[in-house]
Structures are given as structure tokens and as C-alpha cells.
Length: 245
Image (cartoon, rainbow, N blue to C red):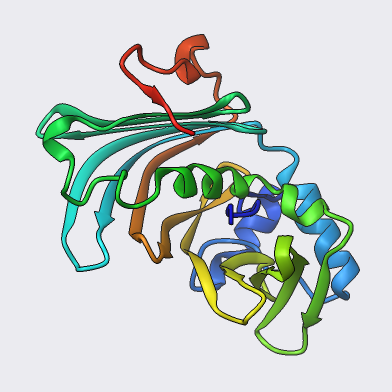
């Protein structure tokens, strides 16, 4: 079962950003005006984001606990484009390119059998990443539960009786946790979004953690840029990349 689309990018007025500095994260807060207004705000904020680029620390964990930590760079063009490259001691060891035409992956032979993205389901990572575009909150079949406490849930039906559940912080209207639950009630995927920070008029989670049965991926973002122009070849797969089925 593929991972459905998720959303994290939030665009906010600068004045509201400054007003939210009293919160533990320097991001704005919103009075609760009902589920419909909350979804509208989240959808409207996200549509202003067109590109995202960042340096990052990437840590890949196998189910047994083995891991590899890499220096990385990420680029996203919305909708549907992702490039993630990673290095170890200055040497490129991983390259993932995801476009509407498919997924391409480079994993050097010396990484095979270790905590490589090949063992962590690179397809799942690629499909989870573009979910951070805001499109999720524009879907028509969303159901909102809660709103009276510190968080509320946004639920979307998925294929084969599964569902996608997004837990949203009520004060800041920022997604904090996504889970994919199958028809038997078993959790198949979890995406945690923490440490939101302001990037101009945008807020972005400084840390994301994606966990499934194939392992765990932790990305810590640094020097995030939003809506910067990206080079034309950013999403061109390297020649040695293999297209994934």
C-alpha cells in the first residue's frame, strides 16, 4: 500500500508570526473557529509554497537498530518533484529523484546490505515527502474529529479500507503526526513533525521522523529556503540512477 499525500508547509502573515513568539515555537497561534475554518486556513497557507530547498542531516535506521548518518541536501518543487542527495565524508553515497514520471535511485554497491535507503523503502520515502505540500487539506472527503482539546484529527479514507489520520496542533494549526492505519486497525506508517521554525513568512518543521516496518528515517533541516528559484537540472536523475518499479 503506497503512502498517501501529506502536508506540512504553512504560510502565515509576518505580523502573525511575530505575535506567536510567546509560544514555545516561534510560530503564530489561531483562535478556534471551527473545523471548516481550520481546514480553509491550512489549505490557503500551503498554496503559496512552490519550492523548498535545504541542507539537512539524514539518519537511516534498519529495524534491528543499525544506522548510518549522512550529510544531505534536499529540493522540492510543488507538486510532485523531489531530489534528495546525501554524502559521507564528502563522497556521494545516495541519490533519490522523484518526479511524476517515476522514482530513480542510486545506492552504491558498498552500501548494500547495510542501513541503506534500499532497505528502508526508498519508494515510501519518496511518496511521503511530497505529502508535505498542503494538498492534503484541500481534499473534499476529509473528516475532522475533536477541536476541544490541544489537538484535533483530520481523517481521510484510503484504499482497501485503510485511513490516513493527521493530528493537528489546535493553537498553531500545524500537522504534528500522520499515521496510516490499515483496515484491521494496524498502524503501517508514522510521520512525526516537530520543532517548527519560521522561514520568512513560512513555518517548517526542523525535524521529521518517518517510521514503518522497513525502518526509520530522521531528517533534520538546516538553512531552509522557500520559493527560491531552483536550477533547471535539479530534478534530472543522474545517468547511473536506476528507475524503480
